[in-house]
Length: 427
Image (tube, rainbow, N blue to C red):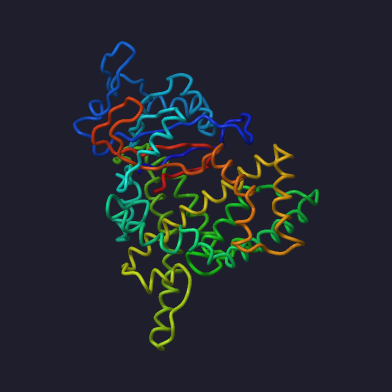
């Protein structure tokens, strides 16, 4: 899987009931039979067989020219729309380590999703696996492949993704939500106008990080405190730096690593991420061991389950928990950010949502997970948000034929890129 960047979405009308254009990217680098040009074929209107070699191509020099001299570095979302208008619905991207095909089609995305397989062939994750191999850390749900990925996800899913299992985290999540609301009130009071939160995106990111950390690490890490603990802030900074330097590492050839600082900065950022994660996991492992040594019952949430009931080595737990953490933060925060944005543009939807919630909840009572299930319009708002501004950035699959394009033995990650400050493919 290649790690890539996208900035905030283009300024265009978005609201409930509007389906936005989709850009899909298919990776042709790994697992292809023969060369990439021979692995994808399509017929034109005259029935003539076409290959990837016939597609328009964006190479690294053209990309750098647009990013630097045309000023698209901070407007990648606009560059995406520009390339779609310039090259049409199907074109190649050959930039550094990224070799892919971009397809602009909502219908194609639907067809790809419907043809996903049980054991998907992962996209090129070399950028992440290189670090794990250097440091002796196991692979997680992002970096594992094939049947090993399926077995790993089966283990991780048991206490995480099934709705019945997720109900058990209701009290944990509600505690984080309450603290988040208190922080929002505090920020408003401290603002010059008394009612402004100047950077809602950052606040939602901190909220999401605190929430997923509370589930995965079974402890609070202080993201919502007035003064964030230094270790937690270093962890947040490391995540941001990892995604930032990923772009440089992906685009630059490997020989530059000995001469330019980006590769070392990239490794340092991962060191910061795993330093924090490993410390939190080790603390829980020590607590579990103390209970076992005292013949006490070992009870707890997600991490306790993995450490005490599942046959996973410590290095595999390190890799999986850290990747689950990265998977849960920006997906949650950006979903909420888009939902708030879309609601702000639709007062009627706001009013309907308000009545849907207050119909179930009276006063300021905190809802239970069961009560949330009784709010159908709330669910509809979230689903419509995901439909109009799809937050899942990538899903990998091996597809033999899609929309008349025959792909032989090619590993295909494909992506929808709505608005991320940064994004990675997830499982």
